Image 1 (cartoon, rainbow, N blue to C red):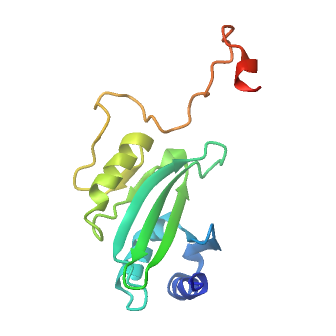
Image 2 (tube, helix red, strand yellow):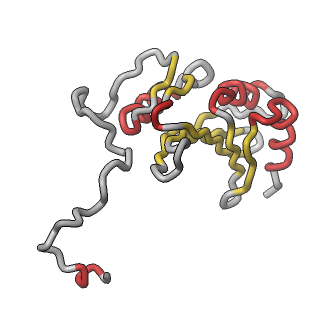
Length: 167
């Protein structure tokens, strides 16, 4: 497999400069961290640029790292160039209290349901989305189930024997 990271990175840095925060390979997968306010411009560039032609949105999802202060939330975009069989991952990060991201539905109509699912589970709002509402959870849920707001186990439990779980 050819090393596509330098090819894509040079194109992105030439077009967007310091809006490209980082570029790395993760398990043979090029990963680019982008400034939040430039994500739509970067995706449009990757879509339109003749050498890039990333015209398939494979996936879009939210992530939550509660210990990463100031950048607790993020959105990950997986794009695919079908002609060259290139796949890349774009990431943006932002504060929990600044969870508004521009919609990608202006480039990929399939982002519609992916963005609604991300809103439903993480509370990330996509500005300009044509129908930003819950898609899987009930409307009056009151929270966002994928945010890591609660401990995994109840530390006050006395009825559990940890030795049964290899601890």
